Image 1: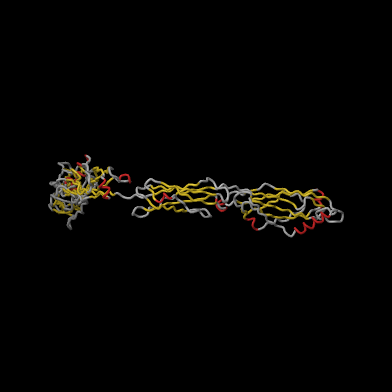
Image 2 (image 1 turned 90 degrees about the vertical axis):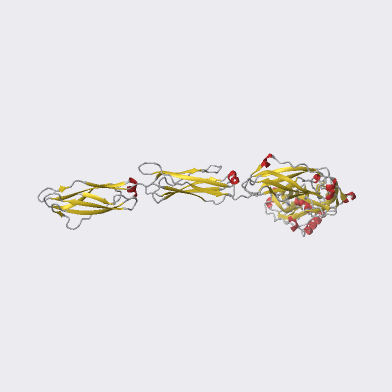
Length: 626
């Protein structure tokens, strides 16, 4: 057996190798059932079937036959550097044992050609500010014919002043023709922006199969991200004049100059230049802090100067002042020193017109109708200009009566700053005021300024005078007879209900208690106006009762009553003390009904007639004046 390979050397994955198996009968007898047997094969793929020509199953002495098979190289074969293959041939002899040839081996060499390239890119085309994040990508391509392991990317010649993150790769191995993309991030510093650009160079290394020198790209890859510089400065000038006391001659004004770096590059030597100034005095030197030597983007420095107002300034009505800021950008930015647009500060001498009013009352509590309340209004000029014709407006008055006119002293027609006057008004308390629980009153004041608009109304001042509610009610129960004789006599009870307090009582109700009569007392009837009972008012309610034999036997009838009503502002009901009426009973003359008096005297008869006439009126009402 002689085994050969065509070609005997390959270069890449997918190359096809054709194996030839030449079998020769070197004996002196015919060999039948000739078979080619594949032995050790180092290929990682699959060898095709071995094909032999027709009639090759029998070989006469000295004859030969050639069989073939094919094989396609895999990446593992290329990485191994060679593919070896061993074969034998066997057959049957006439009447003898089978014969097998010695093995024949062929080797196909695959020379290794390791190669890498690297391409570095950035997701950012331009840098505009510190803090901007840049993502770098490192595309490592395997341009050779063997797998490269242990791939690493090394960053070289990085001009950034910060720290680049670790470079991360999805794998450490890259096959021929494949690309491994690794990444890293970087946060731009202000020094990077000031430098004008950010340059970064990278290379890669890896190990070929079977050892050997590391593979390195022939050329490193560099990416440069330029900066788009913006050099700009601004200034805002202001004065610390905040109160009326600052607007007089001799007062000192402090000017503040806030210079801001409005660009994206650092500015050095920031300074302030004073321009148009209307003051008639001398402005001090402008003082800037040490931080003005270097001002980062968006940072500010505040410089200051002072000025003392002259009388001429006050007379002029205002002091105007303009200033600009200067700063120098880095040398990478063309144009040289910067100058801001001017900023103006105007210090006026304004009219600060304001007034206050404090309202008070001469009474602490209201206790009766007609009580006189005197209100005092303390008006003060709290501004810096004279105010004329002060006018007090009473607002939010809860009284149900009429407040008197507010009177002020004649000298109050004109108030200098800090001056005050006291005005007054009076009011007579009504019953509705007492019932409301309190008397609330608010006031504001305004006036006229010299040649200007009226003074804005002052904050309201409120005084709240509470009432001294004294809820009290009484009932007096009486009977039209102290003594009656016999059964069937009618007794008329009267309930005199009186509001003895100082507030209106509503929904008064009488409750009859402890009635010893054995019969039934009639319903108590009252006039409709018992539902609202003013202080001092009295309402009479009535009820009737007819005596029984048991009452006569008992000898007396006792009856008590109480009354209760609601106060006007809520809360619990107001009860009275009980009132009791006792009627004595005695047996009447045999066979005659008792009429309520002795039949033996004309006076008794007259009294009976009088009471009979009074029965036509069951309800009377009396008003008792306090």
